[in-house]
Length: 57
Image (cartoon, rainbow, N blue to C red; front, side, top):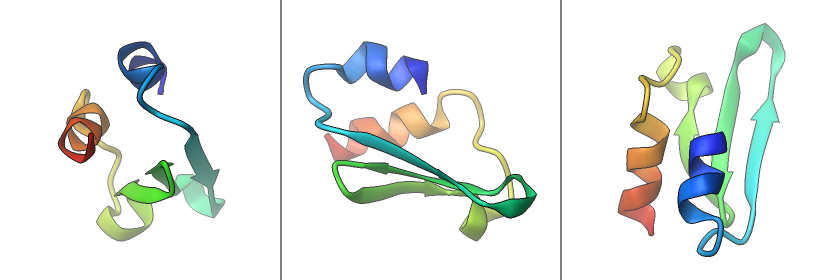
């Protein structure tokens, strides 16, 4: 999460991390779902969420 804020602090209006039971979570940027552990059933690889955000922005 810190890498997103550092890299895109002026482009991202808001970042939402929604925790769920069992360690599952979803990451949304500017109201767009970027990554869902609920759907993938795995933790993202290092830099994976950042790359997904780069595609979005």
